[in-house]
Image (cartoon, rainbow, N blue to C red; front, top):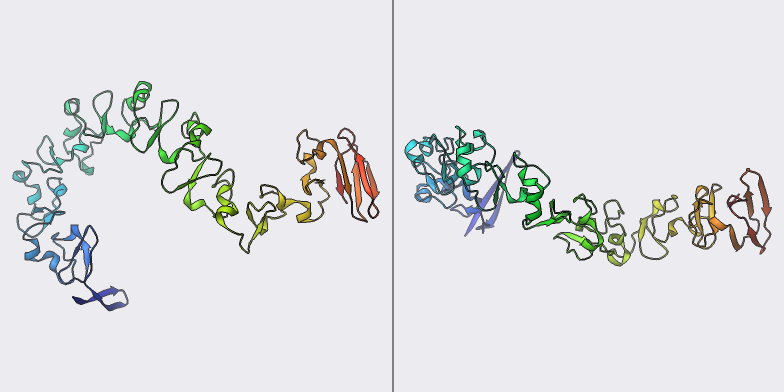
Length: 400
């Protein structure tokens, strides 16, 4: 069947021709085939179909599965959960009549003591007596005599004082959901089996969502969710990717986004060229061809490449006057890193001061002693400089 569908906008409407629609689950097709509306809108007393078929006598003669309860005046149907919930949903009040509420529905099976309302089993002894959220106005669903005898429904756990039911997912989650705190007690949590989708910390005191395991943050407190022995064999949850060093799971959206830690893998494997492809026009390829870095990050005095090639002297030119030149790889390091007891140049020349290098003609070196006395040496073409400048006598040799 072919029909016209009218789509109305503030400035008018657009009409186009289409075939009868195939509605998805949870939707209902209007009689003329031009619209799909939500199931719960059928026979709800409000016309939603342009042809009015969702409220026609023929449609509403028998209520729908999603709206199974018919109001006394026959005007419309409502959901079971609306019957005896303390609100006049029918308009004629029949969903709240005393004779209606004598027998609660399957979805709202528990009757309040004053008989005014039916509520869900999950609302009984849940610690929330507020009638405005669908509970009993007389508070009978939270009375002590009610809760002591009440058996929590499946998937719920009874607190130690016997007066409250909480969701299994709330047991040993680090928050006191029971008024008496029994859901977080040591005895409770040692014997507790975490619910599906949750992981138990090594200290037996906490269950955390699987999503938090190996995410780079210590959620357990004892760090067991980030231990190498934990993460090496951990299977990342759906939508997350495991870093090459197997130490971390990151969201798929962080792969190949051009950003390094924080927010990515500590080993930067989420940005490897092998995974992400060749560098773009706005990126620079590191010498080891492992990573791409933004061009604006090259020679900014902060190494981004794993091999440090984005800050090498051969990349950036001569080292500035406040830096030390590592001859073995051409890297420049800060003078404050020279003779500090840590190796920053691969050949340890920043700590021993021993190196041999063929210098370009016209190069001028400055040797500075701890007393700030400078010695200037001019190097002629093809000359070699072999200088023993031990840290106890000389500060770094730098380009003038």
